[in-house]
Image (cartoon, rainbow, N blue to C red; front, side):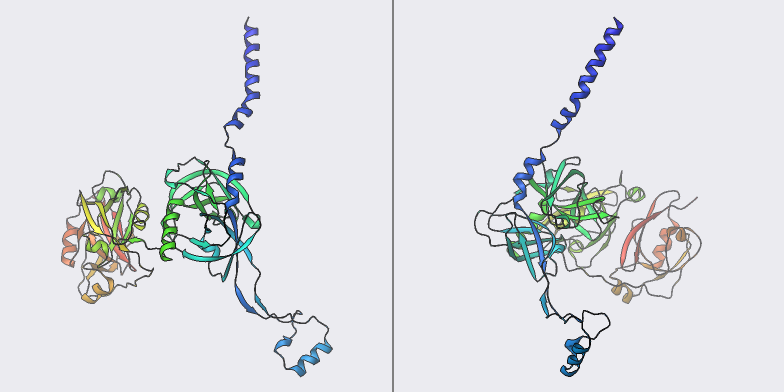
Length: 474
């Protein structure tokens, strides 16, 4: 009886193992149908740079005959049998640089800014092999997007636009593009993460995927399983130069907002608060009265900027911007950048252990520029428990630093200050959530500092302000 049961069990197991691959195959998405429907609207982008190039001699070490007087040129031509210099070339042949996709029947094409940047002529090759010259409607380097326009008559294939905000990590996505010039190459993968911030790209919450993206895929569409474009493939983080790394796409919600502004104005205007922010770690959260690390800590405020006029203070922790919860500090630039300049916004902040709501008018993001700040000298010197000597700020230094008050570090000796990484020339503006207006005030606060508790300090170094934390030993 037992033998019969064993035979029955193994028979069922064998049948199940045979059917398992077919069952798994049925669970996989049908990429073929999606590609067949969506690929006609994907295009190849190539550019041409107009140059005036006159090539020299074809033989190394020989003179450029075009630059010689006729009598000498004739002598060299008779005496040395080498090829003549070709005629001047006015422009290069078009080079395939990336991908794009048609977003409207009247010929608007979306791609990356870095694909067409600096080009004198832009060409779009369609799925039916037609090659059309494109007009640059506008470009936005901050989001790495460019909007093109082609005139191709009626019947242009277009993509279906989806909502990137509905994406979830683990969801299947698919890319179509021209990696290494191979048109209509298809790769698939999943969404790895959402809302990624990359260096020098503070205003784009990138979609991270494991889709194989190579040079030439830039500007191409990222599809969901509904066949809707949810992103624009933009960047690769790799050590090999190929797809073996992380791929990042610009969310379509961000892209379409940029498209509308480029259509209307030819440029993009973003919201701006005029603050320098930093991440809130565990120690900072404790020092500011937060139950857990969250929000964006205001480390510096631009004088007369929107935040300054709206009542925001250094040391405020921004927890919410309009309807967006600020979990990581990188969430704030994403939220602020999408707000139109001149509109009103509501901020929830943690200030002195209490939550407050502030309303302020959002400004327009200015052109990038840095202000040089250098620390100065003043006569008064003071010693303290931190093992540092500080001096008063002069009125001129305050003006140059755009700082209302603070003290400058003159000397750093062995002790807590050295362990914190403080340097000569650093300006301390806040200590234990209190603003410093004099060396005397600094001495008072240092004497009153608690032991074995996280304490915050705001330091301005080379024009950049940040909060650091420390603990005084017993």
